[in-house]
Image (tube, rainbow over all chains, first blue to last red; front, top):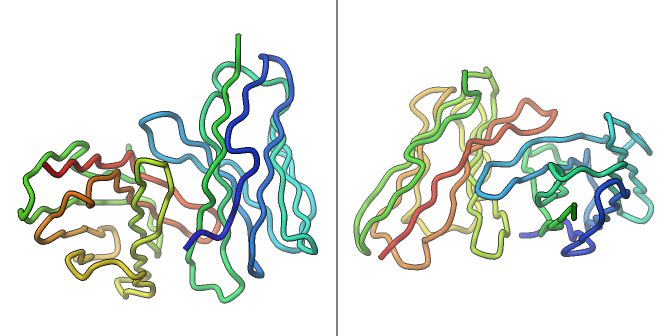
Length: 112
Length: 110
């Protein structure tokens, strides 16, 4: 079962520009997480935002959460070539079954 | 020290065979998972173990069976492999604040 839907599916931007990815989900959540996956590698946890939080920062990352719209966004500022990867949002539901459900991902390509 | 390690990294096998993928975490996490990532990069949760107890069993074929000898290990055993089982399988562990993933096992069934 897929919970999240990322938008866009693919994004290409110039190095130095900001990249914004969006995620929508369907059910009530305990928290929402963003992950990065480089080609041929495992997923790396980037940031977690809880349902009672609206915004969170980590370095060049900024995550927002709007529980009324069941949506989240991930902003990467001043993009670098190394940011080229797939980005996934994932949700943990309110029933606390520890199930982490992933969206389909956004493929981000940073152009030199 | 690798936090979540899974072996083998690559596995090529014939249809009908039985194979296992091993996973170990040294993070002391209570919850471990198995995910399947298909060719379209969709990540589907297969199993979750918490303190050696299966708490989620998604609708995967019963040819797939998770085995947890202890809290630090969650192995995946697959019987009678089929072509459609070809995918990348990821093990992960979590303590409630995000999951740590292994590097994946690319399974190819021929």
